[in-house]
Image 1 (cartoon, rainbow, N blue to C red):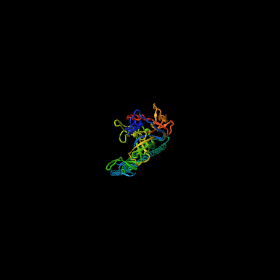
Image 2 (cartoon, helix red, strand yellow):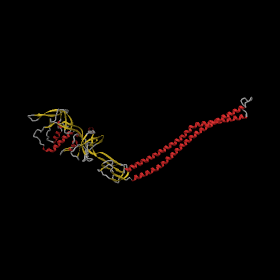
Image 3 (cartoon, one colour):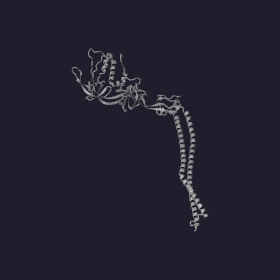
Image 4 (cartoon, rainbow, N blue to C red):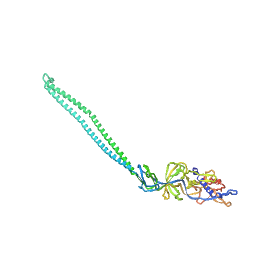
Length: 508
């Protein structure tokens, strides 16, 4: 196939020769001696030329919608459509038995209600425990404060009692002062009693001081212990509420899923269009999948595969000429809307055959069909090869009621288009022996003696090129100028004709 693409014009020339052979092979006669030649004249013309990539694709809907259902493990009760039916948005496609799902939903609601009751009681118990913990905290903190205050009060009372007994002792001792006892009589019974009382009150004061200091020192530790107990109760409350909230969410998800499945037991068309695939029948056990596929037939695309040799020439926005068997010779129009960046693999002809052509001996056989496919619109062909391909989507400019999804379409993707260019038949262009310089033989007059045309060789450059015409640049040609086509010798044998076809001017 690649050889055909690279030698497109040679192939076309061969095909033309073969057709001529089929029509007039037996009318060819040998000349008595010299080979016959003929001179052909052509004119320089102004035409619109196009370069294109040819391909074959299939008509597809521009938009495709998968109709899905979440219902799982249910029986299909009815199917109201068939493949090929047109449906409207909201139309029922099929119905499924939702009885088991409804029973499961009812059970789930009952379980949820029971759980809610239990959870409500658990919430109340947790709240009561927290309230009790708060009360215990406040009581314990108050008890600690009261103990400190009482110890302080007892200490202050002991200090006052000690100071009173001390003053009493000093007064009684002073009353016993005389010449014999200038500092008082320590052995006096009253003095001894007062002194003993003072010593007792001092000891009581010191003991009260110790108890007070202990209460003050332990106050922070006792308070922290109370707060730790309360914080533990708070954590228990929060954990209980969090667990309860989690159980409620689980029921909510189950209920939502069952409600969606029940709703999906009645499957309706999300859009209007044609049913192109149907995956359910009455009595099926449906387990959640695609029920049907709806194609939007109000807009059509053509999907084709372009090989890796041509894909870089194809771009979004390029115009496309489309022909189908259903529309005959009428040319439809479209535009390239998407070019895949990822290869999709090899392609084959729509009839399942591979690419290539054949020539056999004997009765002579030539597969003209493949050649016609390769050049029907001008440009190289990308259909029927075994190489890597890329998917290209082409949007049709308008809907044609004669088209049906799946029809084959021949495409000519216009890669370049030049309007009103000076051109000549492509086989009018020749090359020098070095194969580098292109030239055209321009007719300047006629030899009076021989009657043959007088020509001059005019160097040119080639511009855009179609299957039959080539744009010429330079040379100063204008529309209507006459040029001499290369001579083609009449062949005496089939082999001669094939060999001569390969030497036609400009065919490479």
